[in-house]
Image (cartoon, rainbow over all chains, first blue to last red; front, side, top):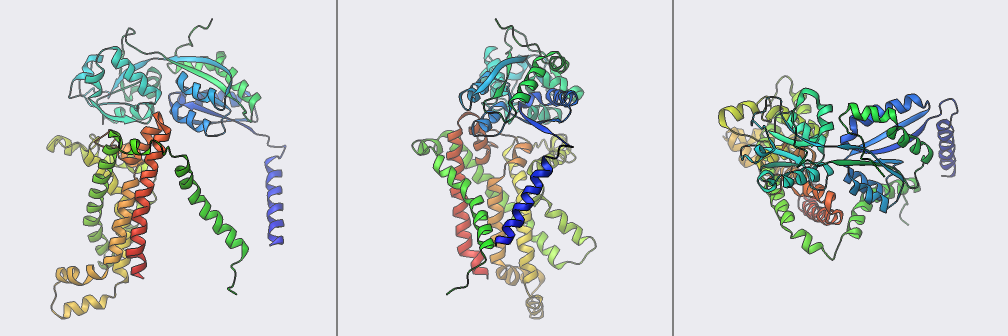
Length: 256
Length: 261
């Protein structure tokens, strides 16, 4: 027993020594980001790695609400980029955040399969009982914003009666519409920029549309606090903002 | 004195047990016991329980109806490609459920290989329907019936069938009166495992059938939904699912698994 323990100890020391090998220094910063940021942040992460040799950015993309839940129950995130202020509030409460700042805004659009089988032209067409509508689930930012928009337009009940599925996140809504299973979906403008020609998009009037504001912050007690702050600065800086613009995100709201 | 097992075995066994026990225990400890009754009798929970029972029972019936004959063919018929067929039909056991869902979409979705024709000729759409959830649950649970039934059939001495044939019984009669009764424990174990698997199904269901209360939202999907808005409610629903599953496993152990040996 004693011998096998010492073998184990030696193995562990050896493994640790290898991990700290100075010839291959890699520091990993872990970023939890809203699923609507998947394409933009993957690009930004790649740019950040190129600009900082020896640094790796690991992403966890999911609904902001899920991510906030994971961080609160002690998942190890260095940076949190949320699609809603509410999810960020959850994390700000426990375990706390540092240097919270808004970095982008997003609007909602209606999407249909490219051939638009249910002939959806305007927001009000979503009340047609023949339309199979998919949106993100309640509690998921994209789903809450979509419901708010439908209620703003006064068609909440009629349109929600046509919902055939409450999806885990906006990316799943895009998938259900792009595959032609559903006739229409409500997602972010940035999702359309990523989906390309797989879906057709229909603009929603500003008067009823909802603006999603995206905050980013360093999570309190982050293992890589310095690197996390640098990554946040990169997102807020010109390089990060350029990628976000190209992916359909609008600039953050003016702060006083 | 009884011979003690090596300490290293005991330690590894303890870790193995802890890995399984702790999350279940944590659920029980964190459950909002004060609201437990209210949560599991809420409209959404009752709808989810009803959909779950309907879907899992229908999936079990279909799994047995098609899986047992398929297992019989795999166990007794000689044909080329049998081992390939055997590998393919149990594939859903190792396939990530979300992949199963994507596979079902491409086959049976509104624009899928077969789904297109179902939609155009019969006006049948499986996606976003309870029937779709049943298809998803059947897809993932039927292999468990096939595995258990085939093992049962293979373990059965072929001389019983030969004896029945000599006595003048036709193949159908032999199957009904000799083979099925003698392999009943394995068939029942397969059916119960399939039911448990169907009850817990999440990935293939949400990918193929979607998530709508009262129609495709099963208990696991309701747990996911609650996680978004009411995490402690999600724990209560999870616990309900755990209790149902444990009840089934315990009942099965006593009745069939040990009885079969």
